[in-house]
Amino acid sequence: MIRLAIQKSGRLSEASSQLIKDCGINIVNGKGKLKATASNFPLEILFLRDDDIPGYVADGVADLGIVGENVVAEKAKDIHIVHRLGFSKCRLSLAIPKADTYNSIADLEGKHIATSYPNILGDYLKEQKVNANIHEISGSVEVAPSIGLANAVCDIVSSGSTLFTNGLKEVEVIFRSEAVMIGSPEVNAEQQKIIEKLLFRIQSLQRAKN
Ligand code: PRP
Ligand code: MG
Ligand code: ZN
Image 1: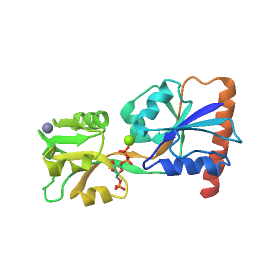
Image 2: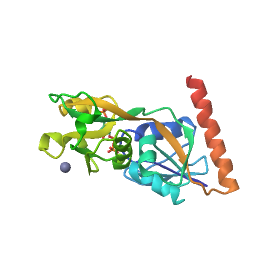
Image 3: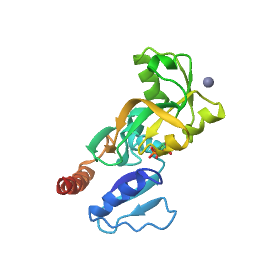
């Protein structure tokens, strides 16, 4: 038996469940249930917050996880990327109010930036030699400038509609991401066989699509 952690609700959840289904794995999940067992494959699925998935995989609570690479990079845990899944592509970007002028990253010197990605942003600012104040917030980041909490935001952009709706414009892309399958460093030989079987099915699906 292996345990796979997927996002409970958010950008990746539907595509993650669909991938399992497309692999011919049948999951019966009661509404609101956070754990489900496959009826035709030795697999248990945990439905978690995406931010928690790298930690659970690193601790061996889950053997596999499907998350955005952005979350993996931010959490920097002892896990490895087993396979790139190619869906839920997005970018982590800096954005500022539409009316503000912007010439270069140096414009953010001394400014306040709201983000849920303090590590990735911190590394980027260091590399760019810009000193700014990072404010970590766990959600609704895009509202920060309009309520006077920050001058800029650093958050995930997919269609761009959240930025647009909140009167922001994207000024720098700092990280590009897609969904990835991550794996725990500690799986036994039997589990490794199951993982390979699952990966074989996923790769066949990807080949059929290309
Ligand atoms: C991201 C981000 C925005 C939205 C952007 O959230 O925080 O809210 O997606 O997408 P758009 O450009 O298509 O409008 P995510 O789904 O990663 O969820 P989370 O931050 O709550 O984990
Ligand atoms: Mg999240
Ligand atoms: Zn501040």
